[in-house]
Image (cartoon, rainbow, N blue to C red):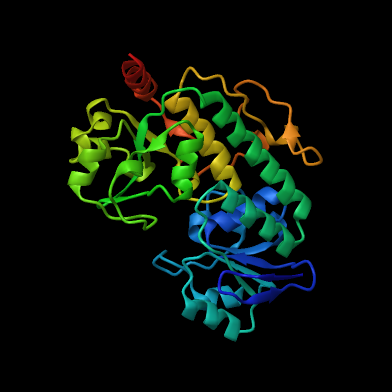
Length: 327
């Protein structure tokens, strides 16, 4: 098996790798989902929410930021799965140590995530698991899109802190769109950088109706400039499990899209699909209304959060906003 990675390098894997080291949590999550959990020998600390991750070697630096080349080499992997944030020097150092490294490009939408999943399946000998996982993800995205197709889309912003936000060309924005929302930056005059730093004026001009944030920023609606937006005034904030909102991987998409859909459109009747109901041969599933997230793939997070968001008054707030816009 020879595939060309994001660096333009042809990466050859001659047989199913017994030892795989992942350099970011999304690759680890994908391995867990497609049936390759037992092959993984190295993970970063941010993958700690995955069941059994504590039994793998941590390749994170001692400060938790990034990975240690020495620790990666120490896991003696047959294959290293590296994210787009891996530097050229880091990739070179790993390859100079004799390791087989596949570098991924940044995922900007769910199609990219599906392609990444397929690639990991090919490289690790888990093609059937990758196909089933992609079918599961696609079925749930389609369910959300179908349920919200004729509804008003609230303006949504995903602040990352210090003025940074998720732009319209990110997988986070793609999940917001699939869930029946629209990125508030769509009409803003901002750079096409994936995660630009914008001014307070831009945030006020976009005037988001809903803020989607990770758990560490769950009080940001009480800070300026967000407090002066419609979202801040209505306390309309969706707090999403960090392990899912920020990771371009299938489980992240399924859980985030389901929960965002329920938050943006609480009265929508979406037929979400459990993974056990997916058949690869038809890439379809028998949907059940408001099907709980597949318990077979639900893992506890390090924060104790469920795969989802804190609702509180959010559902009522978003419902009132959408109703007001319709009127």
